[in-house]
Image 1 (cartoon, rainbow, N blue to C red):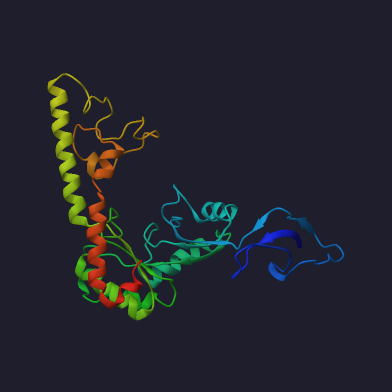
Image 2: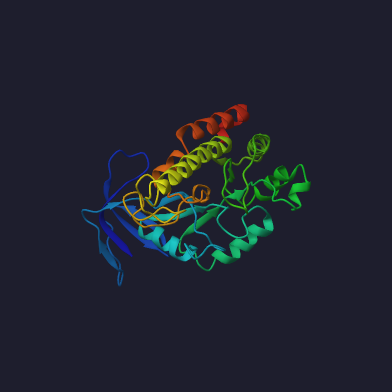
Length: 292
């Protein structure tokens, strides 16, 4: 196939160049102006169009296997290709089982190989020990996980705040060990940086306010909270949540209240991120360059 006359972005060049591109067996074989078509060669006119390299999306949750009711690798990779993304790196936590061992990694690879329409890589997962698991009884399970997975993954992911039973958060001591072990293995550590104590406290304070508002509304003979008439324990349709989807489980746990998206945002304030990032950088010391 010959692509003619496109404005091609090239490394080291400030401005695109008008060039022709020949593709042979799925790869660029020529890149220069004035390429002549050969017999029976398909030709596409790209004049006026900008030709960019395929993008890399380094943070996707394609949910295969395990959560394919909301996304899967076939549809996710198809939409990525449609948007010009030719490589994705998939997160380890939103699949079942999570990618926290070589066996789990192999299970995931078997599931996604027949579905992927573009190139892909994977992250390994560093989760807190699930109660009753073998990891819970092994004080060096994080280091062993990193050593085992690092030849096969592009980095590791950990959460300082997690709502997933299958992927618990790391405490600060475990985070410190994970940072240094990842650095020694030559792999970056991607941290979901929200301080758990800060978020738990902020969430509890908002729940108490909502419960007090619900009680006051009931005494005044008005349904809902703060003058709203929304189903208890949910975020109702409207400005705050046009889709009418369920609220955050921690906030929805307060009986007789109606939480809004503003409540959810306020339960996870900016300060929770600042505290988490500061702690991670302090724990990393000279290995902070491996944090993301």
